[in-house]
Length: 74
Image (cartoon, rainbow, N blue to C red; front, side, top):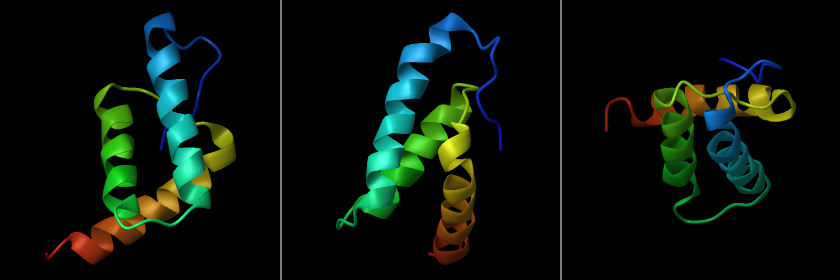
């Protein structure tokens, strides 16, 4: 999983930071559509060739592995 680099392109800055903030809030709270919302955000960051902030990278990676394990056959 990629993490933020100092020389990241400026165009990625606002959207990746906002999406990372949303992930951070979702990691703290449980809601009915939380799992799918988080996976959509993670996918958006990856598709944009973006980055995951270092402070949540481990949690996001764990969630991503859990999510795809749970929904792989669904």
